[in-house]
Length: 490
Image 1 (cartoon, one colour):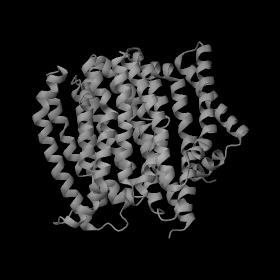
Image 2 (cartoon, rainbow, N blue to C red):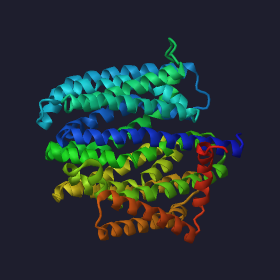
Image 3 (cartoon, rainbow, N blue to C red):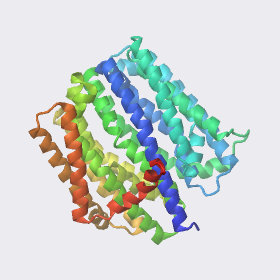
Image 4 (cartoon, rainbow, N blue to C red):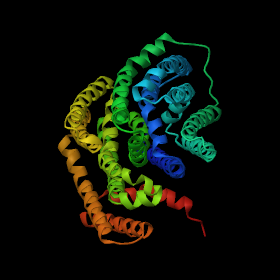
C-alpha cells in the first residue's frame, strides 16, 4: 500500500508535467495554427476536416483499449508489451490498406477528387502511431509525463516548421498533411529512443486474451465516442461547403486546446494514480472527490472566460477572414466545460474494472446524441443547431456518467452537484461580467482583451474568497512547487 504523501507527490508531479505538456505542446501548436490560418484558406482546413473522422476512428481501433489495459495491469511484463505491439502493428497495416482502397469512394461522397491522394498519404500516420502505443503506455503507467511532454513539444516545433515551410512554398492543403505526418513521426521516434524498448520475438495468446478481455469493451466505446465526436466533420462536409467546414474545424481545434487537451492531461494523470489505490474504497473516494473539485475550479473559468472574449480573440488572432467561426467557438467552449468532469467519472469505471459498464454508458449516450442530431437535421437548424445539440448532450451526459460512477465509490450525483455548483455558478458569473465589459468597451482588440482578462481573473479570485472555496488554497499548494522552481534563489 502506498503512503498518502507519496501518492500526493506522484499526483502533483504528474499534474504539473501534464499541464506543462499542455502549455508547451498545445501553446506551440496554437501559435502554428495561427500562422497557418493566416497563410491558408478556410477551404484547406475543410478538406482535412472531411477525413478526420476516418483517421480518428482508425487510431481508436489500433489502440483497441490496450493502453488502458496495460496501465491498469499491476504486473505487466515483456510478453504483455510485445503482444500488444505486434497486434497494434498488424491492425494498423490492415486499416491502412482499407483506407487506401476506400479513398475513391470517400472522395466521391464529398465530391472532392483531390481527397484520394490526401487520404492515402495522410493515413500513413496510422501505421507510425502504432509504434508509439506501448512506450506511451509505459510512461503513463509510471505517471511520467515529463518525457511525453518533451516528445510532444519536439514534435510540435518540428512539424510546425515543416508545415509553415510548405505553406510558404504554396503547397496549400499539403502543408497540413505534412504537419500531421511530421508530428506523428517525431513523437513516435522520440518515445522509442528515450524508452529504449524493443519488442521480443513472442506473441502470448494468454496475454492477449487477458488484456483484450478488459480492453475490447473500451475499444467499442472508444470507437463509438470517436465517431460521434467527429461526426460533424462528415455531416458539415457533406451538407455545406468546404469553407464552412473550415470555419467549424478551426473553431473546434481552437476550443479543443482548452477542452480536450485539459481533459486528456487530467484523465491521463488521474487514471494511473487512482488505479494504484483501486482497492482502498475510502481513500479512493476522498482522492476522487478532491480531484473533481480542483479540476472544476481550474477548468470552468478557463472555458467560460474564453467564450466571453471569443469575438476580440478571433479577430486579433486569426484575422477578419475567420470571424464567421466566432460563434461556433463560443458555443463549443460552453459545451466543453464539462468534458474533464466526464473524463474523471469514466476513469472510475476503468479503475474499478467496469469496462462493461463503460461500454453500456457509451451506447446509451450515443443513442441520446443520435436523437439530438437527427432532431437538429430534421428541424433544419443548420450548423448552429448541430452545435446546440453538442451542448445539450454534454449536460445530459453528466447526469448519465455520474449516476453510474457514483455507485462504484458511493459518491452520489447530489454530492457531486453540491461540490461543483458553487464553482460553476462563479465561473458563469465571471463570464457574463467579462462579456458585458466587452460590449461596453470600444477599444482595439488587444486593449479590450487585456482589460477583460484582468477583470475576469480578479472577479474569479475575489468570488473564491467571498464564497470561501477550499479549492483556491489547494490550487495554490499545487502550484507552489512550480513557483519555487522558477523563482531565482537570492
